[in-house]
Length: 76
Image (tube, rainbow, N blue to C red; front, side, top):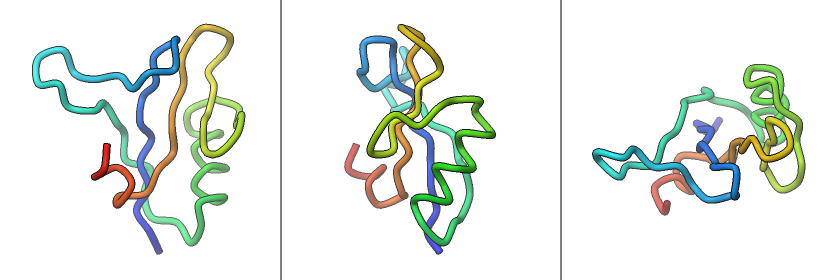
């Protein structure tokens, strides 16, 4: 099982960062057997639709989330 996170995306598709600390804004999703299960859960939890490759959209020009595992997050 891998730990997955949702990284906040701005409306332009860029990664959202905290204005004071410059840390990547994220939310813990929990541990899942696969990326697909993490994405399915995140779609329900965050009320988004899966676009492609783990990118979830909140709506047109509203930003969204990037679903990644803990190792991928460390690289951001």
